[in-house]
Amino acid sequence: MDPTTWKLAKMNMAIRVIEKNLGSENADTFYEDSHKNLKVDFILANQPFNQSD
Image 1 (cartoon, rainbow, N blue to C red):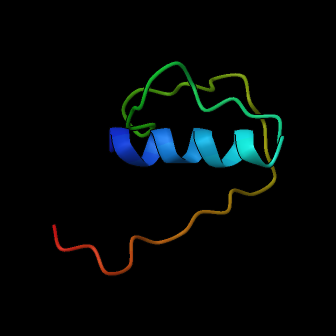
Image 2: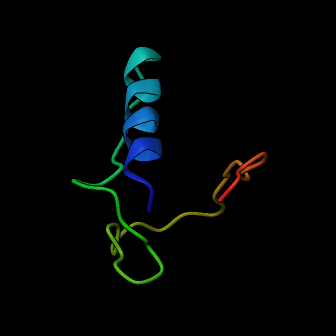
């Protein structure tokens, strides 16, 4: 949902030369699924620690 986090994630993947498909723009995937055809066994995500908002 946060455009800054989305941009940092894309940059992080590019630096490490990791294949990525983060979608064409930042979005809340609960309401707008950017990966409708993607089938996965699990998803790993970091929790937003120390977030003041």
